[in-house]
Length: 98
Picture 1 (cartoon, rainbow, N blue to C red):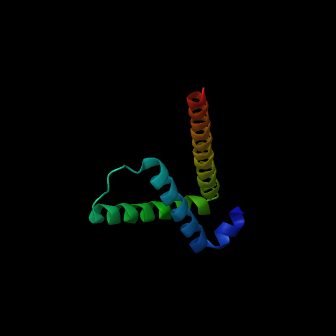
Picture 2 (cartoon, one colour):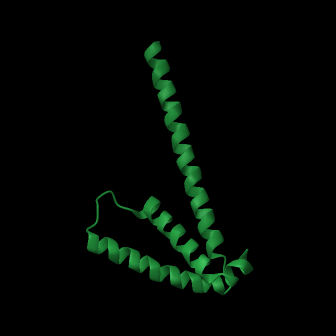
Picture 3 (cartoon, rainbow, N blue to C red):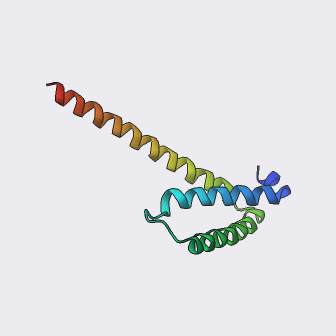
């Protein structure tokens, strides 16, 4: 996979940018909305950072794989929260019946 991404740097850049954007939006995003200028500047900075990460990816560091692990861990936490919420609803429904 590392060699394939080295042979296709544009696809690697797009994948890095998408994964980086997803991680930012899920972990570091604040609840309040940013102004459009700040939002544009943020995504420009993430695009530049994705370019830097692409250089590291090209130098045989597993950047895409690490971002995929981060996304996988975030999805596992999301699933855990959903399961816990269902258990709390079931417990509260059972308490109301008694």
